[in-house]
Image (cartoon, rainbow, N blue to C red; front, side):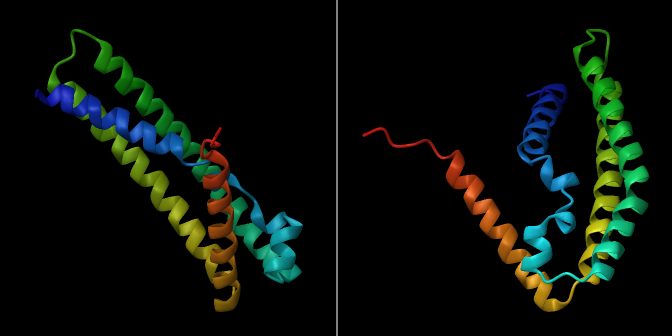
Length: 147
């Protein structure tokens, strides 16, 4: 299997994985929802601090997402261009992965900083709530048995 074909398969798989993540998981302002405020017994100070963390990271996240989208678009063009060689495709793929890594680092730091605002008990409850929501989504996605 040629490197170009392997690279294309990796690109398709990474796009499928990225698309499988719900958009809400990336921009969901859970701390503003009454369900989470009450379930976690968030104080107004905690809500304000988490919002400030979100607002501080938002411009970087938007810019990095834009850079990732642009790099992915360029990679798609390079892959479909019959004049492209493997080195060009590999270079474009490396730009995509570097942009993805930068976005992931920023998002991870944002989530880490948000978690530090919460107590251990609140973080445990948050995990329970997110696990419950995930199970509900999975249950809703399963095909209904027609028998």
